[in-house]
Length: 225
Length: 93
Image (cartoon, rainbow over all chains, first blue to last red; front, side, top):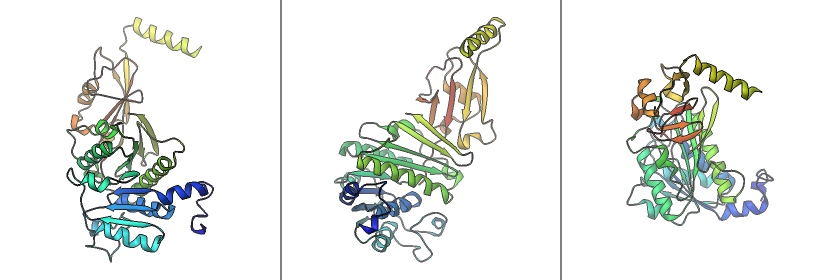
């Protein structure tokens, strides 16, 4: 347990054992996903599934933790599992080199304790919420755009994402605002903290609430959904 | 005491025929070239859709509408003194 000694006493010995048995699926291995997978691995989540059909390209280098100049052109999901082998060999990371959609989501997401949204588009997020609801699996949502980000924890039936993304909206403001390095790291951290609280049944989670973050003005805004 | 004072002020403003207000706050990119927050004249039956159109924002640019910290719909009726907050869709990862 020396590896996890600095997790104590924020996370107890018994809770560490729960995390080692937990199965978490991270959908998206880009800006959010890279940080999320890294944190989950270092926390000792026993089984991580890393889902992404994309490969790394030069424009990812400004923020995507799993990318570097040597990994350009390589699968993001595969790079996640390769890197975690040297970060924490006690855990298992299963890469799924696919984009999530209506037809494959159920098979990819089933058998997990928790799903983490690290996607980069609204349409796939709505698919994710629907399938998580059908499978009765909690979902931690995070999204970023420029200096702004948001996080929420969605338990089956909350339908939070269908409430915050109306069906007419297909693209977010990130298309204009881009994504600098610091926003995904922050939003990923809050998503992981929500994930750990759900797995350990501790603390307060952002259920039926959205935390909206504006780093440009240092505003953290809670709203009831 | 403060509460009584506020009620008195509201009553007085009504008596003098001054228009009642709502408070509108914009978030993130909706602030670009617009006031971050402002008072707007209250009109009986007004909805967030009216507020958005009044500010010249395309309705599709607003993802979340809140009144007094709670999410509402485009056609929810706004009451006097309400605070309306508008957020754009954030979807990147």
